[in-house]
Image (cartoon, rainbow, N blue to C red; front, top):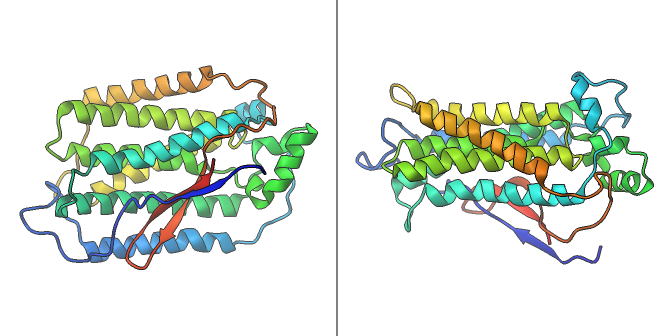
Length: 304
């Protein structure tokens, strides 16, 4: 295709160590069992990989959509929007790893990364299972343009994995878990506000651009966002000794405002002809479980 391929692997959590954290170095108000939580993460990765074994059905377009608004984005297509959303996905996943750890990773940082990785693994597993079970045609499969139809054919099975958006689930899940875990730390108010603001703003941009790219319908990104946020909050909340962390009213308002701003910015980004099949050199990433001899995590892979 005239492009040089690259592989980028970002391990979001390290679960090689199964030793209990020291009593004086834990997430405040929360208990993490590394053997148990490590096992849950392994099960989530296994479920995500096993979902790929679900056989493909007949690839037929849907006559109707459950939500009428989805009809308006049928035949959307933009490589530029897809590339930008892929880059934002990488940024969203990497940001919590950076602000949840310091220069060195101690026990409490390791526990935070373990819960973050668990949240991401469960989100990826749920999205993978849903995609393989529903097998919804992506919006661009409805395009009548020959170049876009050729693109859809080249994508194979992936062209029929629209519901629900893994990008939306992953980015909103990362923003939620990251902000939650940061909220339980002694981080500065400014950093906590950044997590609740920028994290959700970037997630909203990512989800909106997936629609403009023709990768997903409105309902795909809406469901993905809600599932991502739910899993992103529930995973760390279930580890609370008493009451889970609850964001302040100001943080919730900041989150809501950032989501609206992210949607607006995504809609204002110039993409040219929405159905254009132009090729734009840029980052093209996908998320998938990654396993090595000593660690597990979520990997980003793609090309420039």
